[in-house]
Length: 123
Image (cartoon, rainbow, N blue to C red):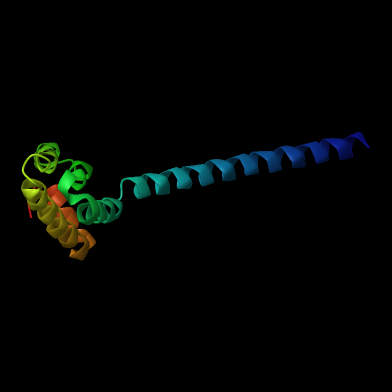
């Protein structure tokens, strides 16, 4: 009977080791896929495009793409609209609307090459 217990213990140990390896592989695959999704240019394209259309006058889409100077310019123009009867914020909103539409109509590769690699800040 003790020999059967030893065999059963060995089998359990092998099963636990195999399960641990499977869990490590699955966790590694999950981490790699999560990095791809988080760093995906498609996510930035969609987010920047939608924010450009909806909140273009605040320049939030520029900040999403990493264009902080351009985003600050649009934000200042948007806020100055309070003092200019909406003229500067209208200009900023039109620019944001056009850019948002442009972002969404470009292919993923073209968007990546133009705005991420090429760092084209305006239109």
